[in-house]
Each structure stands twice: as structure tokens, then as C-alpha cells.
Amino acid sequence: ILNLAPANVPKEGSRFDLAIAIGILAASGQLPQETLSRYEFTGELALSGELRPVSCALPIGIACKQAKRELFLPVANAEQVTLCRHLVHYPASSLLAVCRHLTQAELLPGQCGQTIPASLHHYGCLSDVKFQYHAKRALLIAACGGHNCLFYGPPGTGKTMLSTRLASLLPSLNETEALEVAALYSISSNGFDVKDWGKRPVRSPHHSASHVALVGGSNPPKPGEIAFYFSTNYRSFIAAS
Image (cartoon, rainbow, N blue to C red; front, side, top):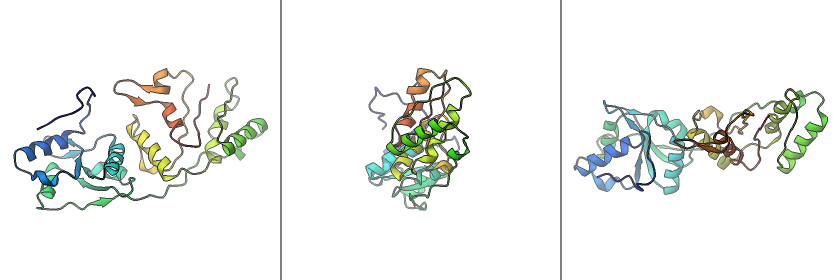
């Protein structure tokens, strides 16, 4: 009934609960198998049958869109998945609601992802910085040419203050870049807030950050700070030391 392949790839989390339950119900003849080929399922199941939210909902939605499939997921994850334009998804509150939809007893209202206008985000303005003429000139050149920029000096000289204002000089993220950034936040430990849609990633790792925190890793693997650096064409990655 169940085959979590490939077997050499570790599986963790509760996002497989709903898919496993649907597989058992279909194998036992309680659900029509022919209707399942165009759907994907994700969600954590409580003992009552209630669907609870899972992490990584946005990358799951992106994969479903690329595979041209429709997605059943918990109601609490629906807001994130809405960012995937043209993805048809069905937010459900329980396993029973999913089963009633698949048996045509009571259809769930399907939703289609659409582009959400990005909110105005405040990054700090370069005009707030007094003096520091050479540093501000360097930021302008880096922003115009898409170059990297390194500030080096003792603590308290304004490196981080200047660097965090680079994002205010850069163009807004396009839809592809914004979706990639949102997906990275979705799988990170802090998660993604839809209010931050379209916000350019500005990161400020501590000078004592470990190699794993910068590059990524740990168990289970998580993206490091440098992943946000490579997520957009115009960089706004802050490394203060």
C-alpha cells in the first residue's frame, strides 16, 4: 500500500500523514482509486481526523504546480500556497472533508493561486547616513552594477548600518525571485509570513556564526545564510564583522 521511495533518502516530519491515510482508504476500497492520479496530499493528522498545518507548504505547492497536479492541504497552510500562481488547491479542515470531496459527496471549494501585490517594505534610507561619503559611493556603484561589496573595519564604524541600506537602492523582486525567497524562508526555522511577500532578503549574521549557519546543514538539513545570497539576481546579503 505504501512505498516511501527512494528508501535511502531520510523522511521526517508529519506531512505524509494525509497521503498515507488516503492510500490506505483507496487500497481498502473506501475511496475510488481512479480519481487520485491528479491529486497530491499533504498534512498532519490528529487522532480526531483534524488536519493540522505542516512546514514547507510553499515548496510543496511549487512542486505540484510544476507537476501540473492539484493539492489537498490543511486550511492553515492555504495562505502560503496561494502565492503559487495557477496552482489549484483545496484547503481542508479534516480527513473526512477530503474523503467526501473525493467521493463527490460534498465538494470542497477549490482555490487558484494568484499573484499578490508586494507590500511596501522599509529598508532604511541612505540619506539618513551622515558623512561616510566613500562608503555611500561604494554602495551606489555596487547597486548599479550588481557587484559585491565588502566593508571592513573595527566595530561601531557603521558597516552594518550602511549595508542594510543597500536594499533600498535595488529594484523590487520579480515574481520568480520573490517566490524563491519565500520558499527558502518556508523551509527555514523561522518560517515565512505572507506579509513579507516581495521583501528583499537582508541578513545580518553574527561574526561568530558557525560554518553550518553560514553554508547550511545540520540534521535535518536547513538552508544557511548564504542561500539567501544566491536567491536573487541583485544581492543584498549582509556580512558584518
